[in-house]
Amino acid sequence: MPEATTSENGSGGVQIDLFSGSRMESLTSMEKIRLILDGVREGNIVILEEGLSPDEESKLIEVTMAEISPDEFNGIEIETYPRSQAADQSFLDRLMGRQSTQKLTVIGPANQIQTLHKDENLISALVSRK
Image (cartoon, rainbow, N blue to C red):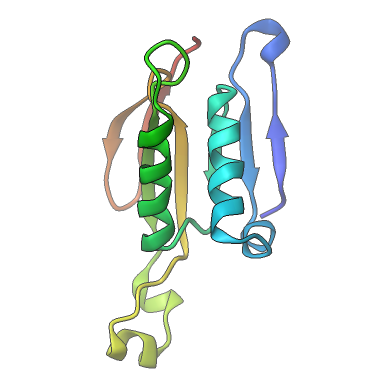
């Protein structure tokens, strides 16, 4: 998936930043977290092609909680859509109980994104302007 940015901020729209797995794999965990939080703090919706590891996701939540400010930053809303475990993991990974990080993840400002529905095939979200 190529990296893309869609922006209509001049007309009051919502910017969506799509990050490919290859772009994110070249970053350290803290660089990933900073990239995500900086985008979300600007009011953007961030979509990750391959998601974060469980440790990275925990650290993202921890850093977000430390940065919440009632007047400036309300936090994040995060939803993950896992890919098929059988198709993405080797037999050895499944046998050893290793988790795959290959999943689509949508992250946005808590005051702008609301998950309406989530199941194994669909994440449906309502995104509002500030």
